[in-house]
Amino acid sequence: MIEPTLILIKPDGLKKSLTGNILTRLSETKLDIIGAKIVKVSRELAEKHYAGLKGKPFFEDLIKYLMGEYHKKKVMALVYWGEDAILKVRDICGKTNPEEADSVSIRGAYGRITTAGVYENVMHASADAADAEREIKLWFNPEEIIEAIYPVEEKEIEIIDKKWREEA
Ligand code: DAT
Ligand code: MG
Image (tube, rainbow, N blue to C red; front, side, top):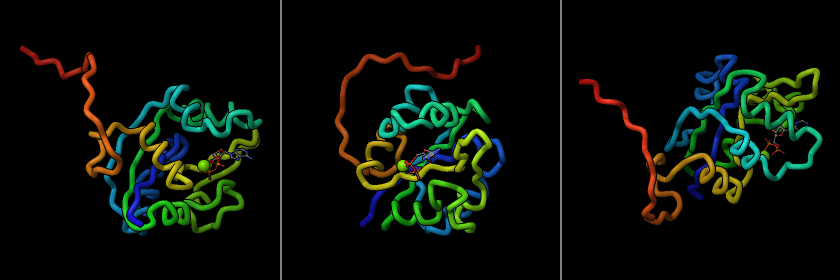
């Protein structure tokens, strides 16, 4: 099935200058990139992203990790799209625990567990189609993605938008 999936290069990946390496590994999947941006992650966004893990003993550390408290305060968010995208990306990403991940997977090659027990596993990849849809809608607006992956509706809302100031 042709489907989208959300990828995050987490703050440790950015701090360690692994962006290029990770994107190169992901290009092995031959999937299309249909959205990409750098995001400064708020607590609200981090908690929504990992809402399913609320109550776990590692939740607070996980939120701080995604917000960049331990590294750099930024994340690279990407939407990849193509045949069996979710499975292909999860495969090359490797297991959640970087010590259990296949050593040629991205997490196996670049991840670590800190002495405090934080899994610094350098990237996120959606686990299934429902997660992908929820996560993509959380991280991206429709106009930031160049394919029509989910239905959209036009809504009239009052917004104050920032534009570059025109110098005289
Ligand atoms: P995945 O990221 O492989 O989808 P997940 O959704 O179960 O795994 O967990 C989300 C993140 O939470 C994971 O990337 C790292 C962290 N995490 C999961 N289990 C953990 C544990 N036992 N100890 C510390 N962090 C953990
Ligand atoms: Mg998950």
